[in-house]
Image 1 (cartoon, rainbow, N blue to C red):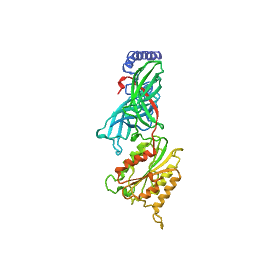
Image 2 (cartoon, rainbow, N blue to C red; image 1 turned 90 degrees about the vertical axis):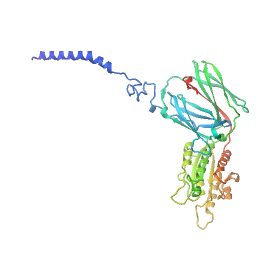
Image 3 (tube, helix red, strand yellow; image 1 turned 180 degrees about the horizontal axis):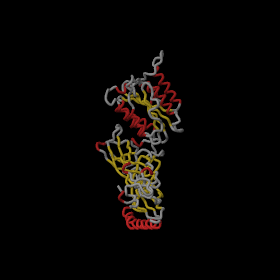
Length: 468
């Protein structure tokens, strides 16, 4: 076979293959090929995750920043046995929103670490703003009084949506209070500065003292504000504003060191969990909840020595110090005596550390159920008391206020009065049942309340189905 014949066969074969590809291959390709979509359960196209990111409407969870709580949620009394909850949250995502974010509020009374009520809900999370979650009013069976509340997000419910549209600009034009002594009313005027009508506007008025501590709130709704127009909105309250236990808040910052005895006598009742230590911890939880948003807490426990490092340093959040209080326990490796002076000096060191804020007041609140038994010094009688009194004198020279609480029948009343800043700052209770009231009195001495500020938080809902 000559060269020309071979070339001709190759040409013919190539033509046949080309025809087959054209007739069969191309239709088969279009039959089997599926263009990438944002709902095909695959990571393809310009997606940065499975059906999210890139040109998809959904944002990938990894591309979103977490929601930020702006302080602790607050629960407040609006009338007899009627309560409401307010929580402020920031969404730092500039183009990400959640249509329905699930959350859980857990409510606690003054003496419990277990919630007596759980409230679940869902809310619209607008992009790049601080918004308010308002729940209530609620009535609780048996007259239970909530003193604190926590907020937990159901992050598994989060579906982040991309929103690159400009948010309409709404402005609070004016506000005016009236009827403060009877049924308070707040009138505000909301102006729509955008070029389009704005509908489904949720508004929450938050009332704070001069340090930003929230003590009440109210909610209302506006159907529509026409472009370039303004409209009035009204917030009301059923009773005059009153300072409840939870609403005692400080005018100025205070750094507070809570010093708790965990010596062996704190398990004198021989119960499980140990008493009176368990009741002491529950009352300590109540106390830290009474102090203001602008306060800082430290926790020091002591027995033979003070905790080293301290149980909780100044500046930790409320949740951390609550968990730390709950974790206090009595050591079983050796006899646990009472070294009050060590507890005082450890608190002094923490209150004078770089974590103390310049200009903030300093206070130490000491609880013990006995007399000091350590440290010992040969030839000096009652040296444990002397050591504690000398430690307290150093505290006073540093302008730190000292509050002392003696629990039970074995305390030395004169000794604890000598430790305190004045005898008026020394308290004595026969049992843990009275501790709650004592801590309340101390919190009242440390703190005061003044009405100072009104903030209006607005959200524009996608539609009316988001109303609750």
